[in-house]
Every structure is written in structure tokens, then in C-alpha cells.
Image (cartoon, rainbow over all chains, first blue to last red):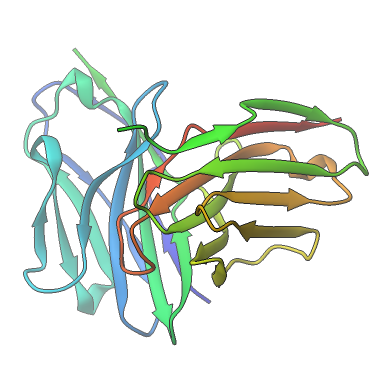
Length: 115
Length: 113
């Protein structure tokens, strides 16, 4: 069965600290990987995505993620966080089999950035 | 442009009742997906519809059903409500099926008493 694991459920960082949020998935076939973010009081919105090609993808607001196929991982990084990055971050996998889709989200990581 | 809209925003039902939730996608988007988000969890995929056909299904019982209309709007129906169905129900729209970026609506918060 397809699954997504986010290892850090709650992360607290000071401003300017570096961020890395882990995401591991289990699925034997081709996957498409996403990171979504939910700022307080707002909808889920796309941060970045990986479909194919360069495994290092850049998203909005200085975020990037690296797809490592051998490790089934898609970790999210940011060199220097800001207070405005306080939000909940979700990793998601979409697998497509015969034109039929299965979408799986991780449990989410709450990031709190302290000024 | 208007984003994904959902109605109602909040709903209170009792066990055993039926509920219908509605979603209007972003203009030009032909695919709608439904998710259930329980407090403290990530969204759980329920259905995806594209051009009025089911194109994806999660692990939910048959009490959950959905449909998509010619104007690409969609309804999620839940029969015989249980307390455990209390959750935020999210709708997301995308241009096509996969792989596509999904744009999420604000959700409908359902409370089952």
C-alpha cells in the first residue's frame, strides 16, 4: 500500500536557522511528489512539486526539495527560515496506475519560527 | 479569478443522517478531488473526478459517494453518518487528471453529533 511518512511532527526554529523536513514514501512505481503548505487561517497551497527531470526542485519563498529515488525520500529544505514561514507543511505523493489515481498525504509537520 | 469554492462552510448533523457537500472548481479546471482531514492528520484522499468520471478512489466505505456535473462542479455525499465522519472536507481542483497541481478550497467543517 502507498504511504507517506513525515518524521517531524512539530519543529521549532529560531529565525535564520536552516530547515530540513523529512518525507519518505513507499510505492513501487512511478510517483509524483509534492509539498503543500498551510499558513494559519489559509488554504492549503502548493510549495513545490517533482514530476521528472532534475531531482532538485525549487519552489516558492526560497524552499527547495531533493528527490532521492534510492532512499524513497523527498525532503524539504530552506537555508534560512523567517517568522512568516510558521505554518503546517504536508508532503504528498500521487501515483497513477492505468489512468487511475491514488493520492496520499503525510500527517504534516507544524513549523514554528521564533523571532 | 475566483478560487475553489465550497458550501456550506460549516454543518452540524446527527448520527444516521445524510449530508451533501458542494464544490465549484476554478474556471477551466475539469478535475475535482475530495479529501477528508481529521484534526491532527493530513488530508485523506476520497475521490477524484475528471470529465464526470471517477478517476481515483481512496479507502473509504461505500457510504461515501460523489459525482461531477457537466459544469465540472461536484458533490460529495455521505450516508448514515457516524461520529467519526466529523472532519474538514476539502475539495481541490486541477486542470486535468495527473500529474497536476491541485488547488484547494477552504473546506466544509462537518460535525456529527
